[in-house]
Length: 105
Image (cartoon, rainbow, N blue to C red; front, side, top):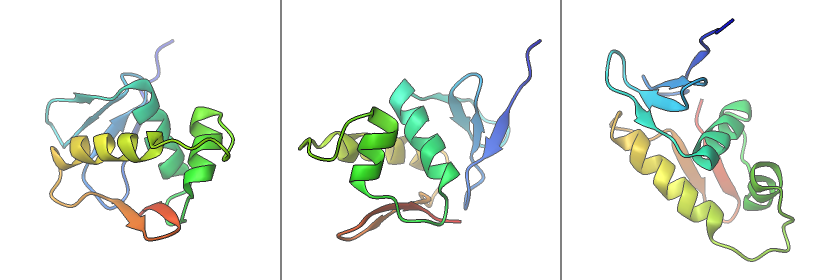
């Protein structure tokens, strides 16, 4: 049985379709997320209102340890922000200088 699971991204009118892995504004056309963009957004939603470090993201989204030096997190955050900005004026992902990122609640 197919159950549609749709979440609202906090601090925005953006809807996340968990089955189709798309984000959309109310009644708008969906924007497809790559697998890791979806995983990253889900992790941020699960931790909304809390600062998550790059190390936490590397460990929990990519399965890498924090000793790996990579800009992967930055690239994917940038890509996800770009897609969210296509649908809403204010991106709900904030950079917390010297700490990490936070999905504002």
